[in-house]
Amino acid sequence: MFDLIIVGAGTAGYVAALYAARHNLKVALVEKDKLGGVCLNRGCIPSKALIASAEVFEKINRAEEFGIKVEGRVIPNMDAIVDRKNKVVETLRRSLEGLIKVNKIAFFEGQARVLSPGSIQVGQEILEGKNLLIATGSSPANIPGFPIDGTSVLSTDHILELRNIPEHLIIIGAGAAGCEMGTFFGTLGAQVTILEILPRALPQEDPDISRLLEREMRKRGIQLRTGVKVEGMERMEEGVRVFLSEGEIIQGSMVFVSVGRSFNSKGFGLEEIGISLGPKGEIVVDPLMRTSLPNVFAAGDVIGGLLLAHVASEEGKTAVDAILGQGRPINYHKIPWGIFTMPEIGRFGLTEPEAREKYGEINVGRFAYRSLGKAHAISEISGEVKIISKKEDGEILGAHIIGAFAADLVQEISLAVQAGARKEDLARAIFAHPTLSEAVMEAIHDLKGLSLHRLPSG
Image (cartoon, rainbow, N blue to C red; front, top):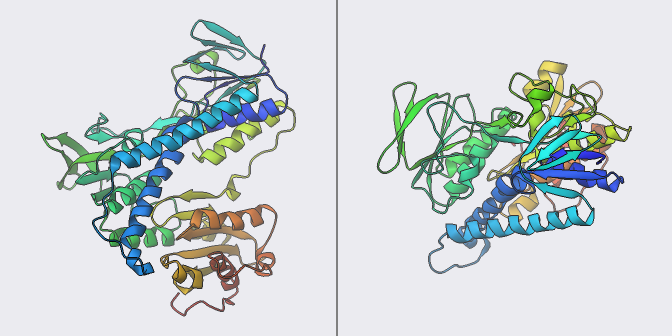
């Protein structure tokens, strides 16, 4: 008898398993695919490994800016880039396997079938447990008329294994994955067209951040088409044709469909035991990750919400804490995240329109990278820090950064806010010079119009 059986060994599942084991629970972890789930194998880690290669390629091509002469042609080798990515993933997966073993977690490979709230079948084996955690994650969503085949129509799973630079890559969806892969392949020399039905790229981000990213993508030669609807496609002997709603046809080498995720909640017994699902197939949970059945919990992508690896980790730990009788709800409004476009983006909290709608009068502080000494020293002057606070009491409502190391920089603001800091507290902080984090300092001071280094047009 296990104290906890976990179905799904992605970020929510394996983190919950390790956390439960550290609290002396007897844990079984079941996974039908690869340990580490989407994030490690087909998401966060492999995509960032690929993007790191593109950043090196771009840096070499800009070497003369730094007084370095590079002789000969610099050519990206996609086989070597993908092999390096695979090596990074394999190294981390082996490390994770070691953690599972050293923490004495029973690991079962195979498709799980939920027989009851306390009983799971894996192959011919029946596992019994006092508690059950469903952490089965999500899969790439599709749209009608674009049957994914892994050759001419790619999902987020396929794009990371592509071993050639397409002559013309058509991307449907200007969300995080679409923009990341668009800037990756655009940097390596592909012609890239991104099609988005909504009015701007990264429609969930702050409009100023979207505007700055769109500008940077145009500089790279990426064609972004917003407010357009795709109707279908046809495969040709060489390439594809994509049909837009206004009758326009775009011809390319292949299509990358990047239109979100679908929840892995069906087909393994949840319906039969009576777990409540939401309108999109997500598992419905309360703030402590409890489902509609006693002693059955769910965490990670499969419950919807913010589909982020670090959120999944926290949800997995929250479920374990609830089992231990010490659960505490997650404050989703203060969680930071990054989008690893070129330049990258860091964000937490409300966008400016969201803050104005909710609170009315607010203060907005900004500081451009181009006014920062360190940014000039490293030739990374494209970017901006934007911080939003309540006008009445100085509570920080959100922070949005685009530029070099943005996903790291936003963390220091998020950490301060999670610790209860307001703009007056942050304004008294001393930042090291010369650093990119000084842009955060200047944006904080700009909330009161006191940024000393902001240019009038910055």
